Image (tube, rainbow, N blue to C red; front, side):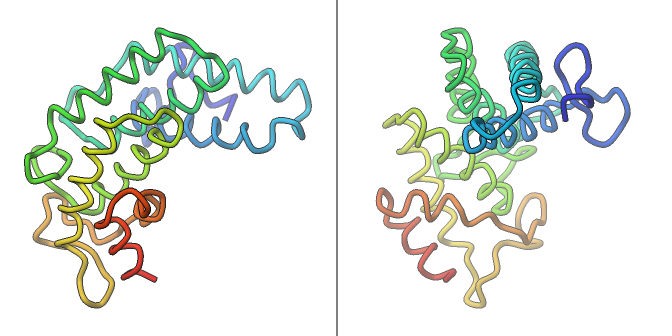
Length: 201
C-alpha cells in the first residue's frame, strides 16, 4: 500500500494515474483501522512509513473531492478515513474537513431518509454509507449524525425483502448487495437498525 501511493498522497482505483477519491478514502480508512489493532506488533520501520503514507493521504483528502456527482458512500468513506487517522494526529484542520464532508452528506440526504447516490437512492450503497457513518459516530459521537442515521435506517427498513435480500432493479444503481454492519452497530440506538439486524440473522 505504501508503494502504491502517488507523491501527492492519492491512490488509483481502476486506471493508472486516476487519483481516485474513493480508492484513497477506502484504503486509508482500512489501513488506519488496521494500525489501531496491530500497531504494537509492527516493525518500527513499517509503522513509521505507513503513518507517513496515511498522513499524506489525509492531506490529499482534505484538499480534493469528487466532481462527477454526489456519491454519499464515497464521501462517508473519506470522512471515516480522516476520522480514523485523526485518532493518531489530533489535527484540528482534519476535524474541520470531516465536518465539511458530513455536512455535504446531510445537505443531500432526502427528507425520506435516503443518502444521495448519483441523484437518487440506492439501498446497497446506502448500507455501505451507513457503515462508515456508524464508525465515525463511534469515534466522535454527534446527535446530528445519529439522527441522520436513524432516518436512513428507517428508509432502509422498507427494502428488506422477505427472503433476506435487499434492493434490486427498482433502486437507483440497481444494487442487490448490502453491508449489514451498521445495523448491528446502531441496534441499541435505533429500533429500525435493531429490527433489520434481527431479521437478517
